[in-house]
Image (cartoon, rainbow, N blue to C red; front, top):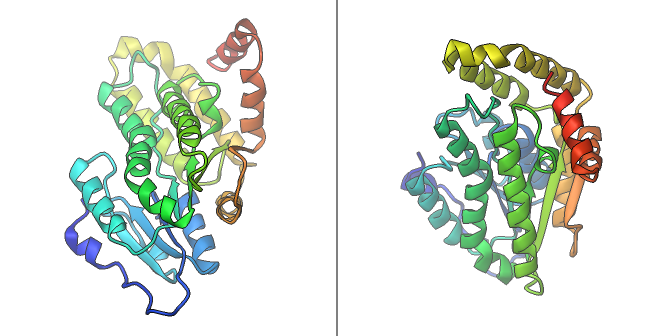
Length: 293
């Protein structure tokens, strides 16, 4: 959990008369897209406040210039409060990149309720809480918010219903927020990537096996074979997945653009899902059902 000691590690504001350094908050910054984005912004002269899970290896993040690390559990109210207190106390904030995410695959019949809640808390609710609290600072600087969604926010895939639901809800919140802050000078963008070469595949596969092992044997018997096939397809997709650095460059470009596009589809898988979403519902259902076999 974050602590007040973490919050005090933030650097002081620049001396009077010097040009202000743009500051970005990036959640889930210890690995993957978050770390690549922190590196890209740091190399471009930004000051970065990056969050990591308590106990997570943050060596690579700490090595970046002008970067402060805060240990935060986005599902814990006290931890979130300490993070927000630390960021609100800063002299300026120019960007919020809500990147932290969690994927726990499993059939709706066998997915524990706490795993469903955790995905929604991290993927959907925490970004909304951060946006609500930090909008006043972003209005002052004419800053921007970037939300990292997913192609599965457009079409939920078998055994990814909870993850897809969290990303679809994030897309809905982002669309509403963008309209609500129009004219305020704050930009709101949603990134919808397909497969990205991060540790999420290994992590989600391991969590999927845990879900399967925790089901009653008769329930698991219905789903084990198709879930194994789903894991194999995901592994194949990740062989040609986008690099996190590609996503990071896009985020940096968005934050340097006065009026960025509302949504950014990235990768073959995301574009395919966007096309499937446009099909008649009966066609879409048949395509998705085939993926469960």
